Image (cartoon, rainbow, N blue to C red; front, side):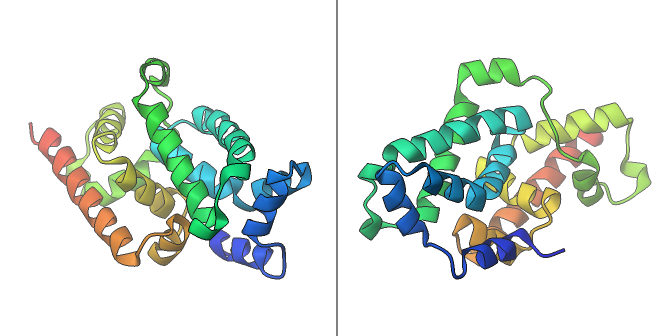
Length: 200
């Protein structure tokens, strides 16, 4: 399977640049916002799911974000930054704001769509470390919620979306070393949290 980051690059090659699309959006060109949506909605959606841990919330917020892109396009100064980086920052900030809101915390409850086994495989080296499935799920969910949103994003993209660390660096527009550091720190934190609870 061709990695999504490569598909995005191929789609963009020979096609209209993001900056040109944003200029058209600023002129209220509806076709331009559709092109931008097709180009980046999957990446932005992955970031939202990684932070919110809810596909329903991610879908709702994704629509709001593209409405905001439509609204803010006329005021965006293309000379001051990259369009993609701006959209990623906007997406991350909106997701964190939603995560911190009281109404979201009240709605969230059990909206976890992660494959728990993928994290368990990294944190439980032998069958002797396993407990009942329901208890494991609760432990992993609680532990995952205790790592930072930035760490949640890189783990989600790596373990649930199948991206390499280089691809994640490209997707999030951050240095490869930062991706490696966040991944390592997140796994150490999860390992400590899970083993600490299992040893009680």
